[in-house]
Length: 428
Image 1 (cartoon, rainbow, N blue to C red):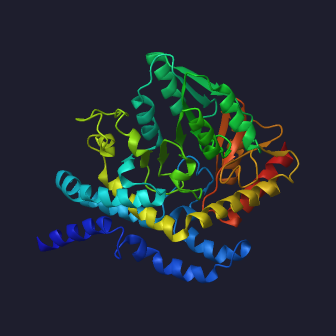
Image 2 (image 1 turned 180 degrees about the vertical axis):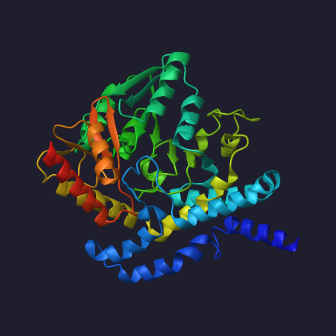
Image 3 (image 1 turned 45 degrees about the vertical axis):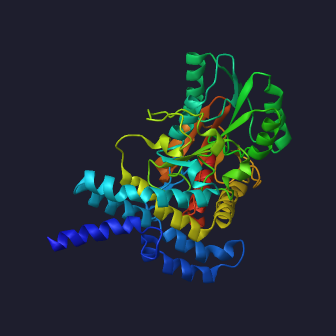
């Protein structure tokens, strides 16, 4: 009996101590990271010894397939995997006790750490399951009336476009969608397109921070500043930017922000968060029913019923991992990886890129095509002949294969991608 009690005590402490000296990150990775810092020497290939340590912290780096679809969902480092496994083992012995009375106590410390990472007040941040849930909460919770206008684009994320179209159908709002041909390397073109679409009835501008189809980084701050001059609120879809780009949410000057944490933060699958400017919380109705739907308490958005607190609490180890690398260093590395393969791919006859290589306009995601092949055919050839996992993106005016490396991607991995592109292009 004592053995069993001690087992559960240790297991529960692992997660609730994610932000202390006994975290799994400290146990599994801290010494290696400390040693790796000795190899850090500014920018460039001289840092490969450092990044090899980061790569080894991901079991995905040893996968039988080369994963270059991190824009969809990213694998987690070992510390996050082990934390989730231990939480699940503990909860399985008595979910109503270990989840509701033990793990639930970890939400407020987690909220504080996420808020610190995002640069916001903890009372403005709700923890949920993904960017769709976060942004749909805002979209359906806004007190919009018939005839009110919303401006988005044809290349926003589908679930968000579906939500706005549903409000159009149900409430009679006007949903305008701008058409952009990316890449665009001029912020003024983008900002002016939004401003030109504004009318006296415009209430909301919806911006996707990084366009998931081709990786274009949108000038969110400039659009927000312009929108606020017209008395318009701004919603930002940060699904692909949070945990990747070096920014704090207030830097964007938006009013609402939603993201998934299972992309570039490498948290467990099914984790996300929502930020709402404090003075606007009360007017947003929760997506799920709440006892006090007009409360100014951000926690009203977390009444989601029974869900896995195990998944939620394992976010803590992903935060530890992120902070050990540093946001600026991470952004620069992933941009370096994209440019490493992208700049060389342009030298291969018949290969085309559909994404800017400039850091202000893209970071991780890039679209590529080979003349004579459809995106589906190229994607299939990557996997069938080279065991490279990418994804074909064919939608509206986008037609390419999306390639997305992460910090666990090595230069040898990208050399393999380049070899594959060259071989495939020669065969066409």
